[in-house]
Length: 124
Image (tube, rainbow, N blue to C red; front, side, top):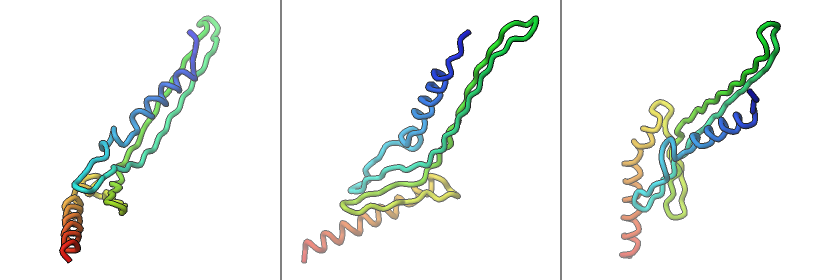
């Protein structure tokens, strides 16, 4: 049996890269009226590997190889854009991503206020 450390580490790394994406965890950017909301996450990756071989009297030659990895992903909030303005709506640590969704009504109210002010300015 031939050991292939590089091939094994490549497979583990590819898997971690494919899973540690915002789209995988909280979804794609989306539109809410005139606002564009982009999910933001914090990612931590870790992996390790090891292998060895040996020759024991009366037991013969042996070898082994192992690898493992882990991903820690935390939703942070949303980048929100409206025209030239960019703001960040943070997801509270106590409530996770649900805190960001709780701010959606506030976001809609802000959007309505901006629209109202724009219409008032057009009338003047």
